[in-house]
Length: 69
Image (tube, rainbow, N blue to C red):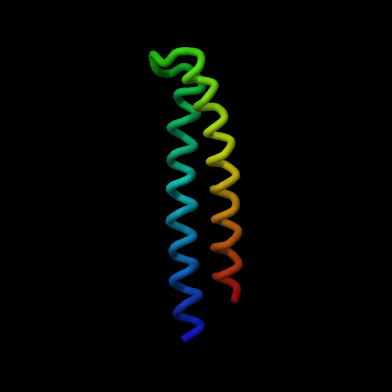
């Protein structure tokens, strides 16, 4: 039963990590000026991209921990 729980948790963390990665890429594009966004929006997107990167790493680490249990 514990193995099933770990597998589900690992899958969940993997999905959350992927979602954070996708969000990070979108925010990076806005921050780089590849849209018609204003300066404030670009700065906010840059901040959000950093936060998404932290979340991505956190979820990837948790996924690895569950995979190795």
